[in-house]
Length: 69
Image (spheres, rainbow, N blue to C red):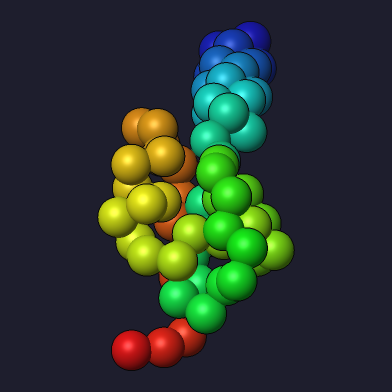
């Protein structure tokens, strides 16, 4: 019975963790993008510099930067 309670508790933690992770967004940065548009959530509307993405990001968001210098 104790093992079952531990397994259920761990499953609950995983569910809550997954739910919280799904609340975060990915923002994209591509210096060569001709059409940047906030909130920069895909490559088509990617920010042209990292600071734009940082300014648009919320706590827990990921910022993905394309290859480049």
